Image (cartoon, rainbow, N blue to C red; front, side, top):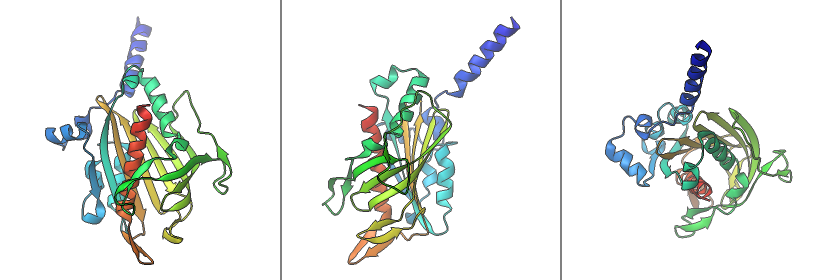
Length: 268
């Protein structure tokens, strides 16, 4: 009898370990109207260069919240963040919790599927334009020819690291280090530039100075998506020849494109 009670207790703890939080528990300061706006598809944005705090729209107690607090405290640099919500597609509602975690884990590591994703380009008249002309994982960050296939797993570890290559429509060819951290139903993708980012041949972001974060949290209602870009030692605007590049706007449009990519992938 004691063994049975112990087993039931362990099963109860295991079930609670991966219990999906509600939106209201993640945003206790949000009004009911705020939650409804989020559910209806509105994207919340925040820019530190405009005196806002990106941690204000970060999920409470999440992996992304700790990164946002650091982004808010940058002495020199800027941060941008976007918060949105994705209802579970029918295919995900039919999965067990572990199946859903595995599926999500494999989706956020499918770097090659970012090839061809669109973003809104100001230079193209605010029209949808291809953001990444190419994207794939690398076995060697110092060789863009060391292409490897996207990994596929049947289990979800606590962490995973890799490198990837992206040919950006504006910032050219770049290599990134990518670190994944998973805690229960909270998945955080941390993308850091391994190479300098250039615009028209001029360096606008030094090596290692940019972190883009894609956080996905499985909630009771659906996927919560929190995306950030944190640029260190960088003014918000950079002048290249006769062009002024608004970096916060450029990075916001890129993290929004990551959100659109995730929406597309979970609904396939």
